Length: 277
Length: 332
Image (cartoon, rainbow over all chains, first blue to last red; front, top):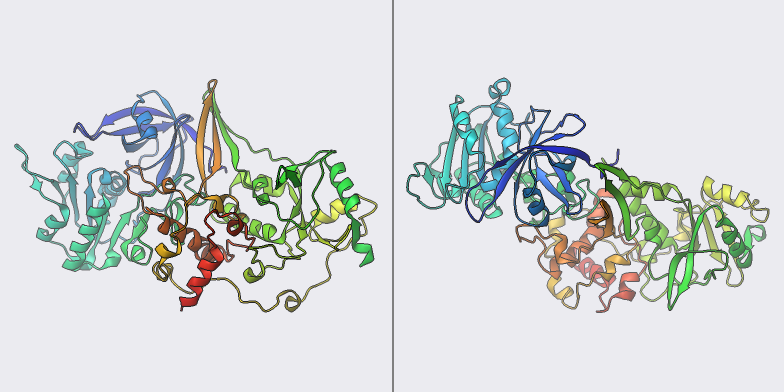
C-alpha cells in the first residue's frame, strides 16, 4: 500500500456551520468515487487534497457507524482551506486515510462521559459523541454531559444536532457563549468557570476536551482542582502535518509523532512530554 | 591480501563500463565542489580521500522528487527507481543510511519511493584514510575504514590501489562479473576490540526522559549565533524531514516531495498562527534531541554519524558536537 496515494472522492453536500462575518466554518459531506466504504474510528483523521493547491489534515466529524459517506468540518483559514471552501456539491477532491489513533472507546465503557468543546473543537469529538449516542451503544456508557462553547451565538457548530442529543435519556447539552446577547437563554461564560457549577462523579468519569489550547489548559486545571485524576482526561492535539504516516517530521513532539502516536492523548501522557504543541 | 587488491585505473574503467546497465554515481568535481553525480564514459571520477560536500542521501531520498501526478481525474505514483551503483560513500554516510532505512521502512507505514531507491541501489563504500576537520565518527562509534552497511567496501592503500571486500550477495555478484575481481572474498571476521579504540563517545543518556533535556543547558545561549539558515539539515546524511508541494501545468498537477528543515519557522507553524517552536532556541534543541535522543529511543540508532558536514558548513561556526558535549557535562 502506498500511503501517499489518495483516492478520488465526491462532495455530496456542503453545510454552512457558522454565521459570524469573521468566522467561516463549513462541513463537507463526502463519499469515495469508486464506492468503497470509509472505515474509521473516532479521533482519526484524513489528508485532504485539492490538486495544485495542496494537502491539509482534518479530523473526521461524522459517525464512524456510517460507512458510505463521511464528513469533515473545515474552517477557512489559509490557501488550501480557501480552495476547499470554494468547492460545491458534485466537485471532486482527493482523500487519503484514515490515519492516527482513536479515543479509547472500550476503556471508557461503564463510565460517565463529559465532552468539553470550544468552537470547531467539537468537530473531532462528534464521531465519539455520535457513536456513544447510538441506540446500540448508549447503554455501554453512563451519564453523558456536553459543554459546548462558542464565541457568539452564531458560532456553534452542528447546532442542528443538539435537539436530538438533548432528547436522549441521561444526556445533557450545555451551550455557552463568551458574552451576553439578547434572546440568548443558554449559559454565558468560559467553560473552565462553568464546570465549577456542574455535578460529576469523578470515580467513574472521563473528560474529553478539544478546543483552543488556552481553553483546554484552563478546563483541565479546573477539573483537576475539583478532583478529577489526570489519567481520566483526554484531548486530541492539533499539529502541522504533511505525511500523516510518521515520516516527514513536522508533528514530532519528543519521541512521539502526533500523526501515528496521536492525535488522541491522555493528559497523563502529555504531562510526560515536552509541551511543544 | 595481494589478491584482494584492484587498481584505481581498473576500478574507474569498471565503473564506466557499468554505466551501460546502471546509473553510476560517483564523486565528481563540480566547479570547486566535490559532489556525487551521475557519470558517463568520459567523466573524471575523483578517487582521493576527500569527503563530498553533500552525502549521497539524494540517491535514496532526492532533494526534490515527483511522487504523484494528478491528470484527467486519475492519480498515479511515480515509483521507477533506476538500477544504481554508488561509488565513494564513506562509512559515515553508509551508516547514516541505516537511520534512513528505519525511518522510511520500519513501523506501520513503509515509504514505497524510498524503498524503490534503496532496493535498486548497490553501494561501493570507501574507507577514509584520515579524519577531516570537523569529523568525529570515532566519537560516534563508527570506524572510518569499515562499515557493513554496504555491498562492497574499498580501502585506499595510499597509492594507486584499493583493497576490496564484499559484504553482500549483491556485491559478490557484481565482482563476479569481472575476471579481475571474481576471486575477491568477504572480510575476515573482525573482533570488535580491534576496530573500537577507546574514545569517549558523543552521545546522550537514553535512560533520561526527554523533558529532562529541555532546560538542562541554556539552549538560548548555546544557539545565540545560529542564523537558522538550515544548511546543517540539508547536507546532513540522516536528516529526512520533508514537505509536499504541488505544481500544476497544462491540466496536470505533479506532487513533489522536497527536503524541509526543522530549523525553519514555517516547519511547525499552525494555520492559526500558533507556532510550537517559535524561535531558533527551540528549533535547534529539536534538531539535537531528535538526532541524539528521539531517533535512538524509537529506532535504536543515533541520527548523527559524526561526518562533520554541518560543522564544516555552518556560516556561524556552530558545532553540534560541542553542544552535545556541553549537555553531556551536566547530564546525570
